[in-house]
Image (cartoon, rainbow, N blue to C red):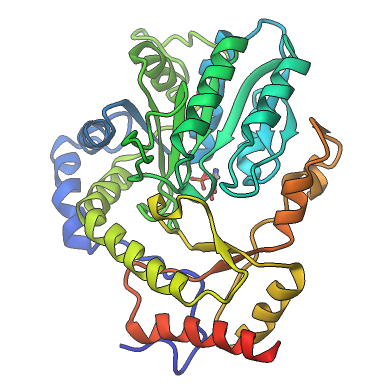
Length: 378
Ligand SMILES: Cc1ncc(COP(=O)(O)O)c(C=O)c1O
């Protein structure tokens, strides 16, 4: 089946496992007549996610709720009166919104121009300048690519020296490992992934919180179910409903079965697309460790990006990445730790190329043709 000759190549082509593959898992929930609140599919998913990462895991309704409960559980471990959350502006809205839902003020930090994650020196400066005010650091595995090990270690050491918990938002990163073998899930004090329909491991909506600390995992799990104790009495005022229902867990389990092949296919397609990049366009440092929700690249200039966007025309659907958060109306008034020069400049050059786990060869060729057409124009 070709999907490029007659219509525009879509930016993403989400798919879910076949009904029979999902039903194979959901049957257990039907047998028990138990469709939410830690049923058999949820428990199996939790165990398989833990096995894959070597960490405790808590499947949740979506990553945004996962971030919210992780911050709620981590916050008491930070400085007592602190009210700020350090977060990159080069992020997704939920990375900062989850802090606001916890009564914290996002304060933006800059990123590194090569790996596109929080810049270690910017983080260190911010923690030193704001000692006692920072309740949590929310760093990202940008685009689901794990940060280089020395960067992760620097984040972990700086946060631990400052007595501030580190939460890593790795929404697109499930299944990735850093260059030293550390899996997504094991970074920081807690880490969150998304199983949204457009994520490489998709369940429609869904996500998981990971931590290496069993007590923290128990606290996070409790928060996802109204913080009820065994007598169904709420133990914390900020308990919420963040539970993943059984049908979502069944889809996630079926997706997990297909994931090794799907991830390998995404990585192979990404390598082919990157081979076609015009001069001056660059992928993220250590991009080969990513999971390829789409293919993010930086153009040499805003003008070079505009050339590609216009060459794509009606044939290929391209995206830029979201505006940086400090340029969104919701966060325009938030403090910044410095000028956010890298974030601002890189955002104007970011280009997102299409990806699918089941690309046809002619679809990848269409992306290459479009990129070559952009170069020919200039
Ligand atoms: C970096 C990041 N964080 C959080 C989220 C929110 O995930 P969800 O849609 O599962 O709530 C996303 C979604 O794209 C994301 O990219």
